[in-house]
Structures are given as C-alpha cells and as structure tokens.
Length: 263
Image: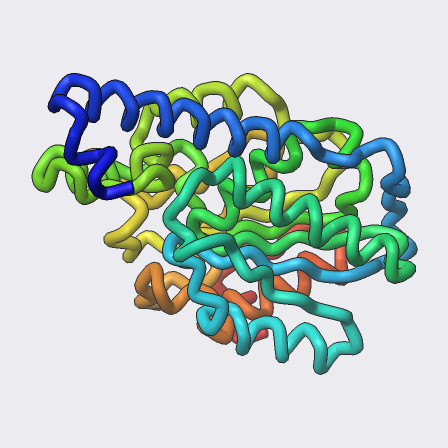
C-alpha cells in the first residue's frame, strides 16, 4: 500500500484523498438518515421512561455521571451515551447514536424517553428531534449550556489554528450549514423543553446561544442571581441539578424569583 501511495504524483494523491473524504461523508450521511422512526411509541406525560444523557464536545461521559446517579436515586432509569470516536466528529453521526439508544430503550420496554443534552450534546438532541416521527417518542427535553446557535469560540479556534477545528467544531461555528438547517425546523409544539445556561459561560459565546424558540429559556442567574457557575460546572451544580429534576417531574410554570433559589 505504501509503495502504491508513494508511486502516485502529488495531484493524484490529492484526488484520492478528496474521493476518500467524499465516500466517508456519504457513509455518515447514510448512517444518519437510517433513523427507524416508524416503530417508536408516542410519548405521554403520565408515562415517564428512560432518561438519555448526551455528553458535550469531546464525549466525556464522566461529566454527566453525577447527574445520572442523581436521576437514578429518584427511581429513573438513566443512561449516559457513549459517542463515536472522541466525540468531536460529525454531530449527525452522533444523532444516529442517540437514535440507536432511543430504540434500545423502547425495545427494553420504555414507553418514552426524556433527553438531557449537555453543551454540544444539546445540539445532538436538537438534530435528532428534527425528525417529527422520531420526536414523538420524546416526553421532555432539558439542555444545559448548549450552543444551539453556535459559539464564537469554534469560529475563532478554526481561524487562529487552521486544521485544529474538527468536524463538530466547524459545525458549531455560528451560521454553519448544520445549525442553519436545524433552525428551519421548529421545536415540536407539544414537547416540554427547558434550556438552561449560565451567564458566566466562557465556552459558549454568547451564553444565550442556548436560547431556543419554543423552549422555556432560563439563565441560571435569573433564579440564583449570585451564582457563579462555569460552563463545565453546569452538570454538577446543585441548583442546575434541581432544575433538571424539576423539569423531568413537574410541568408547573418555573418560579424565577430570587427567593426560589433556596428551594
């Protein structure tokens, strides 16, 4: 193989590399579009099922382990997804992993799924929900510090260090094709969605990129004005954990008064 490669001229090597990339991207696209939505149940609010937690950029499952344990302590079945590769690849391929996890939960008897997406994991959830037939299986959604409209950090990183911005990084650049296409699909009207972010976020810029039309949008500091919580602390912060648990158990309007922070 090495002899064959070295025998090629530089232009031919570039052509082979381009063709290989096209084939790879085609395989990813085919994988994502093969979502099996016809055999999913329709979620009802009185029948909570499995909670699926989607990690952020880099796929660190440990970032959501404490939150998953807290959910299990309330009696919920909670699973943290393992994203393909190092969690920096195509977000559409990650959405296919979420689709597989939904089917695994349903095949095991879950009547619905609740979805919790942290950081870029929230974008993965958003992508999966663009299929209305698949979305019917979702009962509730919570996203934590998710760059649903991108983050300037991704664009700046790619500009400062060319080649250092993997596929998911490029997709999280504000105005990317992926995010623009996702914006065209409204959140299912009947799906309760809570989007939480922190004003101290230095990873998702601006922090309110987490704001989503059709969702209940809450900056942590609206509820707890004195909270100083970084992006990486969102999944483990006690106030955020309380908001997640509340969102998955209660549909009453959220009390945003500062006095609600103690609760």
